Image (cartoon, rainbow, N blue to C red; front, top):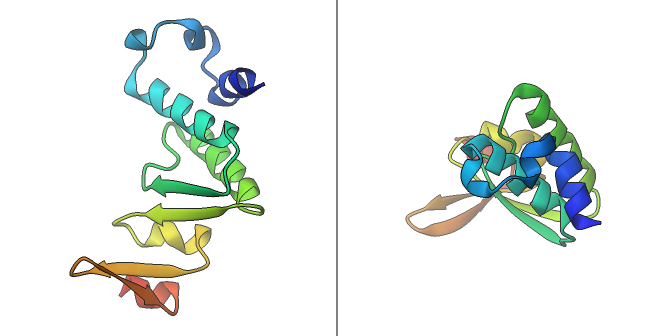
Length: 110
């Protein structure tokens, strides 16, 4: 069930059942990531805050995302090119408001 997945993945414990106004930004980020992975998708859209939180939770998020990417796509927008190197097969940059496809990560990083 979707809610059970979100509660389990986010690792929020009893906080999960408290009003959102009592949550920290980090707790909300954990729930947001869990909710995005819990919903079926053919393509994910993410920014550089993709896997926030402490290191163990960030690793868990990236592992789960890599698993999902076997069957889904990802549009990843960031101003930090190195973040795309591992997750993305194709790269592009925005120049003058236009999307410019690149032949490789190295070309995009330049």
